[in-house]
Image (cartoon, rainbow, N blue to C red; front, side, top):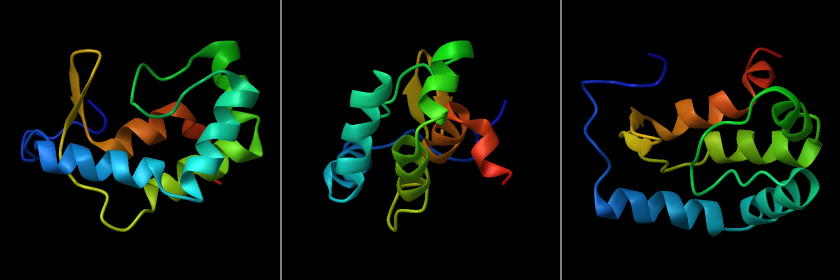
Length: 105
């Protein structure tokens, strides 16, 4: 399972608040807001990663790709597991799932 780690604990309330604060800080919040406006997909709060045509729409927009990379590289992003659709996954692994192809280029 990609991104799930039995070694990493579930995110604490403080860690979840840190993730939320990172997502709401500029310029990241601007990228994520424009991404949502262009693609109708909301990167945060975390939810099921898009598939098929929705994924093509999200990943086709520069603001979405930039937002994902900025979020992923954010200093202080906790290394813990969050619940996404009943599955434990790290925030970085969740971000990689949204547009998997951008991480190989």
